[in-house]
Length: 261
Image (cartoon, rainbow, N blue to C red; front, side, top):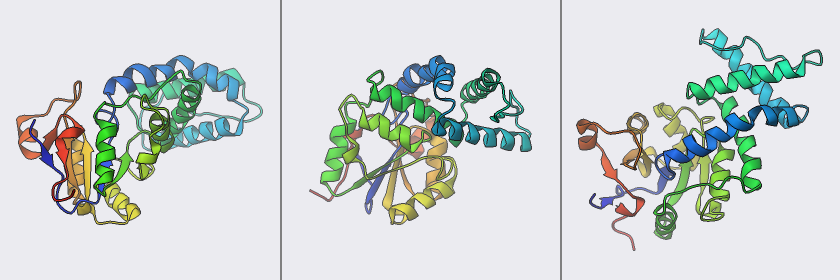
């Protein structure tokens, strides 16, 4: 693909992770299987700890919300009182988490629990965060040109920091100016990008968002944010209409800031 210019007036780049900075296979083949394989053991080992109790409480609130919205749900309650049979309660949490993952849910409750499990796996060296080879050199180049770089992912802020803090390139968190997740709002909701602009302290049109998903790109455009769609191996195929509409890059190295040294 030809070089693409970062839109004039851009002061901040907002980067998606999955399919953009990081192969989709990393999430699907390494991160998610780790949760499925170790979830019950993790809950059993940490059930009485405050952090785990908070995670379960948040899952319970999510289940109650799902019931109010008449969404299908595998369990009716997650009751963590002193009278609860611990194994039964853990099994209910496991069932709900696995159901949410199978449905590709992006709930904050799910992402928080996953983030805590991944933290231990990264810290022990069992997992290292994968990033495409063009990502870190490009971020360094953009920052050298005066741009700020932020992450916006459906994965929790904690999970994002783990990926870049324990990456195959080492700890590269100092290259990132901030992180946003679903607590800011859904990535398919234009209001989320308006909130991010407000948090960054700039206008939406001063942000350029890099993502592999056109439904996120559309939401960002609705908010006035500039968009570049990233085409990586394994990403969702774009239609001819989408290819014609969006600026496309296959590598961050193709994205150039013109007019600055």
